[in-house]
Image 1: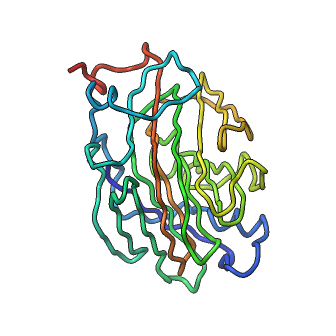
Image 2: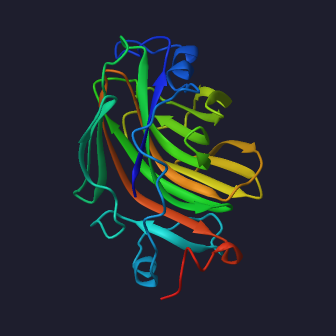
Length: 267
């Protein structure tokens, strides 16, 4: 999976000493129409195989009748994640598989006087109706960092991102439409979030109705036009912030009738 990097602007830096206001958090994840990217939109880099899916130890109680089309417990790099280090004008990063986890170290470089941040996401595969679940954790001295799932991604300026911050106990749903940021679900806390611990994030999408679960508990839902578009794993830090993200147990399921043989060929 190749990585996509996007510069974002914010009104103030989110510090580690005090909880930022909701407005500050939302502004910190906002993108502009002039947002920069370090790569072109990634293409599908992975073709699941029957052997891989049969060997998967991850399960989900949602839509047990749907077929598993992607599974990763990160014991190795069988799924061809784009690993290694990188640095450009926006960030410094290191991606690796370590001790059974997918680990991402990200630092947002100071490029505008602590008035911006960076969101980076890794494309997995396209889906319209789906169940996606993944466990994630954040290690940082700062609170201005989050991770989540990108869906309905037409391009780098048009997508949704369900984001979670276990350092400060909040989640939200961000929409980018032609590069303009909206918040269909505003930043809010929830008792389902485990502070400073691993959390499991799940999206169940069916006919344009999206249900959002944190640690198995339904926290919200949203309805919009369904699209066959990429699902991606996303990480975000404010400018000047360094954070380590650790992921495990990634699972994606889809209805049998929507599994395109050109994407998921039989072996």
